[in-house]
Length: 211
Image (cartoon, rainbow, N blue to C red; front, side):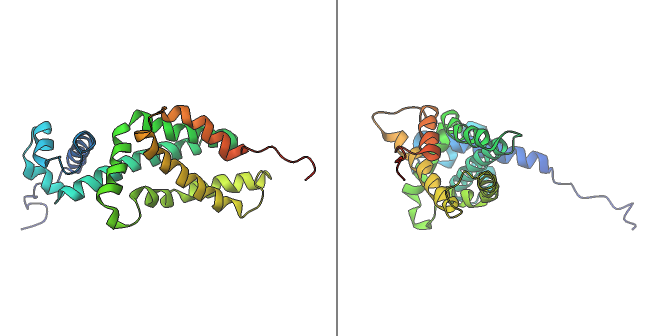
C-alpha cells in the first residue's frame, strides 16, 4: 500500500491541547491561591472546568507537578510582560522605570500568582532555589543589556556595581512580594514601585560636598 493510499492516523490537535493545558493551569492557579496547596483537591479543579480528574492527570501526573507548572506559568507571564517593557524604544532610564512599575503592576493585577510564590517556598523549600530565581536567571540577558547602556552613559559608579545591583534588586522585589501579603500597613505594589525605583537609582543619602 502506498503512503498516499494509507489512511492517516488521527493527528494530535496541538492547539487544542495547548488551550486545554492553559485552562487547567488558570483554574489551578485560582484554586491553589484560594484554598492553599494541601486543601486543594484536583477533583475541585476538574469540577470547575467540567472535565474528569483523569484528564488533568494526563497533562500533569501529580498535584505537585500541577502546582509547580502553575507557578511557572505565572512567572512566564511576568517575564514576558517586564521584558516587553525593557525592549521599548525609549531612553534607558525610562525603560528601567517602566519595568519597575510594570513589575509591581503585574502583581497588583495578578495577586493569585504572588500567593503561589509564597506557597511554593512554604511547601517545597526542600527543592532549593525558588522558581522565581530560576526565571530571573533566564532574564539575565535583558538585565545585562540595560547595565551595558547605563555603563556606556557613565551612570554606573563602577562595572562591579552591575552584579551588586542585580542581586540587590532581585532580593528586594522578591521580598516585597512576601511582605506585602502580610504587612498590616499594606500598600499596593504600584504604590511601592516609586519608592523602590527612587532608592535603587538615587539612594537615600546626600553626597558629601567635600568628597
